[in-house]
Length: 492
Image (cartoon, rainbow, N blue to C red; front, side):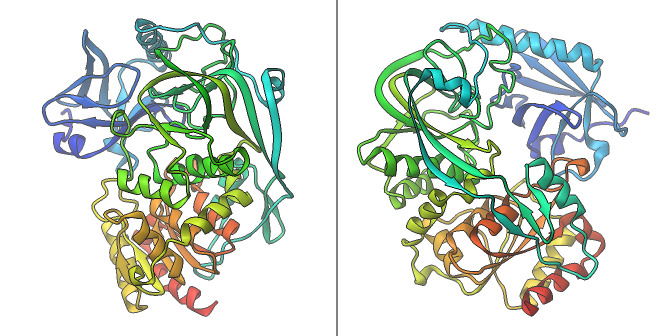
């Protein structure tokens, strides 16, 4: 008997589409009650319907993809929601991977070609290749390798083997009781008559005058193959030409963590070097609705105000722009985490932390819950264990989701102990200049084989905080670990 797909769970979840354990093709797919699909995918999905154990996705011209409910881990392509622990609810493509991959590629290229407005893109170039196109290149900061203290154990026999695995993928190596980062270099680069993009998954991508994409100007480009092959089409109108601008945002500018640590931090460093009058461009959230935004416009505006960048800000709608004098930062190593160890980012958070108000602080012990966020990182059992342990140790539970930035800064700056599931709210530990004790409830969000996302461990290391970690899934089976971790924090 065929197992029917639960329609309500499809609607309540936020989905991604991609290879099993591989590349994601589309993020943030929302299946609406009326049968429509809200997404920024280039595959062209518009509508959906269910037929017993199959879900069909359609574009304007009819059916393009079909998925079936499967309880087996198979090689292929899937629709999946990260917060579902039940793997039997994953949806696998009916077609063979090779066939559907080619089908996807054809759909993507055909979609792009429909609105082709500018020249085709040539092969991408790295910093060395960029030098011949540069008007200038200045070394803003050079820093020796940073030693990150290993996390403190939350209980006696805790292993950090999976954390080691994820850190090694990010370029950090074990060095006795420390993890060692690479040497950091931050360059301010300027090219003449360059291009940059807003929207369509190309946010922040920078191109030279002859259409060579510059590598690593956008770390989260939705088109990882862009510039790998010759003659890749780009489907954005050139809206206007600017005299001068700095570009520091990337595709995930709508994510609070990425907004502060990449977009805002780079822009802050740019103003210090380029002067008070440098125009800093950023996507206009009100005119570009293809991305889900994890923060309000008020938070965005406060961030630019508190960092002193509000007078430099130029909000732009979706499109391509040509700039006579285009500035951008190149960071070596190119890993997303590297900027967290820069003096520029530390200066940004120190400057913004000056806007904290003690009246907004809720105490020294803070437990940040994720509220009604659909992408909850913890189960009901784990939540209960954390909440009970936090309450017994006099932590105050709150949520950042409906707070403005000034309230979040104030709570974080004056805290001494901080508990939170993995999520953007942990970004706020960077506002705390002292020795904060951080307990992160982490999760293997990218699959068991990839370990944990270590960004907040590295943020803690960069700020000099004491870091503890618990696995959300393990808490379901061993809820006693929550109390053990808080006892360990108390003992330090």
